Image 1 (tube, helix red, strand yellow):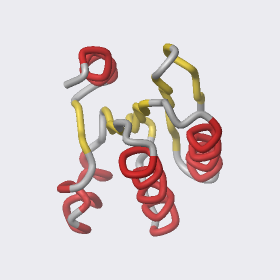
Image 2 (image 1 turned 90 degrees about the horizontal axis):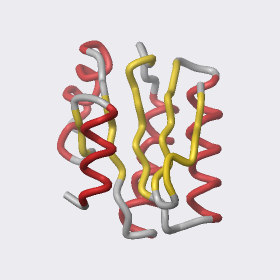
Image 3 (image 1 turned 180 degrees about the horizontal axis):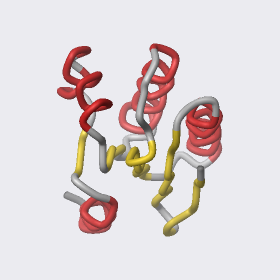
Length: 112
């Protein structure tokens, strides 16, 4: 849906369902590869379904942001259906979740 440079060090992405979801995550991966000093907040309120390809891209983004770049990745506003996918796959234990975008932005700005 939209990817914006929210601040000098924070990328905020409002994501929707495929096919745009895959393209948006790929664009964020590319941006974080070019500019490694970026925290990322993904607003998943518009995402109603995750497939294995989406999950693989999210894992790739997580690895790039949190391990390679030593930055933070937060997922915000995950609906019940998508949350179920994270629970069933065990990914709820490796991603960091926040209730909403303002909470996520505040946490990134304060360095929690």
